[in-house]
Structure formats: structure tokens, C-alpha cells
Image 1 (cartoon, one colour):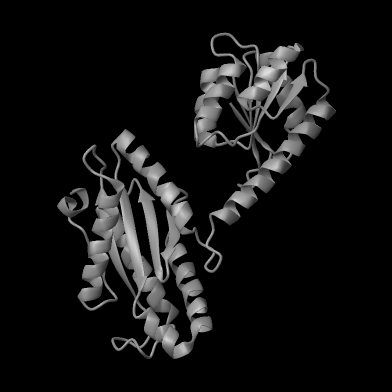
Image 2 (cartoon, one colour; image 1 turned 180 degrees about the horizontal axis):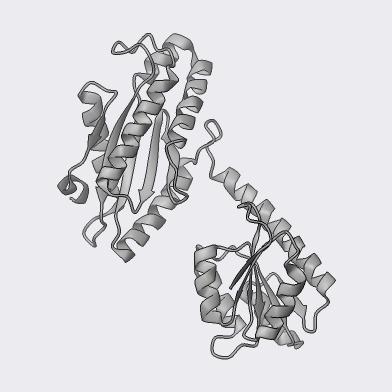
Length: 314
């Protein structure tokens, strides 16, 4: 069940897990007018599934539930690297110090005792949402390239490892698009590093405009190279996006007198797609895309080269 106060994507998501519908009805009645998206679950199992799919900003978790209790739900959340940072606020009638200590040891950030005061619950909820927002902002800064504003190499490496495991686990495809700005050293030599930085910012913006799905990731790979990570993307779709990128950079019409082919900034692109198997490693996909990039540059630049399925999977 899902209630929305504000459909804005910036609105924080709060997940409430309690096996007693009447308790959830009370939360819904009092929290629906708050600036949050409120989702509820009637069991620990359902709560874990919703946490995995929604990635809420805060979980309000009842301790005493049949089957999987709140402590076990919290333990499983904290054991999952992708969910471990979600703050858990326990709602409980348990008032024993040892139980409260157990909850904090499992990673809970706070307790609110039943029957709880709604104003106190709201205040603590908003405090933890504010802390989560600040934490997310700091994490975003740590994953962002300072010059171009797209993801940095660290963020890409983490995302690549995670998406590789997901693709392998579910038997899905994963595509990489590796981009290099043609003759960029000559550009810097001719126009200066200040103009070179501005060029990279504009190129990054053009590339980012071609990445339209939430699960896709564009990152600065290093120097004048960029990489796009695209889960669940077949080779033909990856090629289409790569060509869109090449055209978008061309439309910027950034003067580049040292690019003898067309006198403006262009990019070369290598594309590789794979469905991960136990014998295939992430480095194989990256090498296949890099080999194609080398081929595109060797073939005259300002073009896209695509790896065959054999090249990507070797």
C-alpha cells in the first residue's frame, strides 16, 4: 500500500513496517499531511522487498512482529550494502534496556516507545530525514567529478562492480560506452587549459543529456575520457545512444583548428555489450570497449566502433 503527499521526486520516502493494520492506520492518519511519501508493509518480508525496490530515506520499524521480527529485519537491512545506509527508527512497546541496546547494536538510529506521542514521532522523523539528506549530499560530492559535474571514477568503479553482479545474477545484459575527445592535447596546446576545462564541461553536459534512464551512469573516466554504464541495454540500443552522443558533441560546434578533419571538437567511441557469465570478468568488458575506442580512433576518429559478442565475452 502506498500513499503520496507530494509526487516530487525530491520528496523523502518513509517506509513503515508493522504487522498490525490499526497501528499503520494511525501512522497514515497523522503523517499523510507531512512532506513525505509514506509506504507501509504488514510484515518483515514485505518490508525488505519494499526497501530494496524503493530505497526509502527512513524506515519506521515495529520490533514485535510474528515470524521475522524487527530485529531480524534491521539485521538484514544492515547486511545489505545497498540498504545499510537507510536509517531505522524502531517503534516498540519494549522498554527493557537490554532490548534497546540490542537494537542500537544492530544499527538502529533511534527508538520511539508505544504508545507514542505523535509530535515527538514527527520531530524525530524529520530530524533523521534531515541528517539523511545531509549524508546523501556529502556522499554525492564524494562521487562527483569536480570539473564536469558528472560521476567520478570512484563512483563508476563502484557502480560497475554492483551492476556486473546484478547482471550476472539475473542473466541480463550490460553495456559500456567509452568516449574520448579527439586530439584534446592539441586543443589544450592551442587554446589553453582554461578553454580545455570549459570544453570538457560542455562535452560532459552533451553526453549526460543522452543518458535518459535513472539506472544509467555517465562518469569521467580520466583526463578527456568518459564512460557510460548502461544496465539492461542490448548492443543495438547502446550503439544508438553512442551515435546520439557523437552527434550531440558535434552540435556543440566547439572550434578546434587542430582537428584537421572538421575544425571542431569531435569524439571517438567504443561500445561493448555482454551478458556476464562465470568465465567473463568486468575487465573483459572494459577491455572490449577500449579496443573498440582504439579502433574508432585508428579509423579516422569522430566515429563509433562496436565490439562483436565474441570480443565482449572473451
